[in-house]
Length: 220
Image (cartoon, rainbow, N blue to C red; front, top):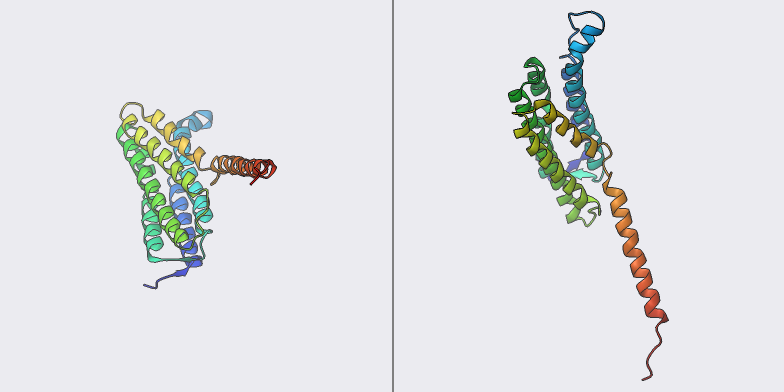
């Protein structure tokens, strides 16, 4: 294996895998037997679960592009971390189908939540691998630490959803949906917070420098 390789092949392969994942999920949608509004009501839970799985996959694709765009070449650590992430994400259609076939029962939602947690952990590994390379080259962005904290918050939400699935599976799905809201925009709400901190530090330094300049010098 080469020490480093271009990111173009990694992104092309990842885009292809994610496109196949979405295609497989949409094939699970079936036309209801009932006609009219009754049929729509019958299929509505299926559509909502599909929407949740699609949202996870699409948001991962957006964040994957945002993350990989920070580097120009990949190393073996990044390649293996990316493969693990794609493997865990590729299982999402299977567990989505399980939830739909079992009528959103407790055990199927439990497995679904575990699948999403493993996928989230896989994406965290990819981020750590990329951060490692950026750190070696001194180009680690200042929002990286805050983004890692977003990963931790996401994993906590997954851990809440796993036991919750046994008692309130639909509430557990709602808990999982919160994770998608966290990652809709890759740097939100990280970037505004960081910008505010950066501005505050810059103002403090400016004021400190001004006060030092204005202070009278003591006679020697």
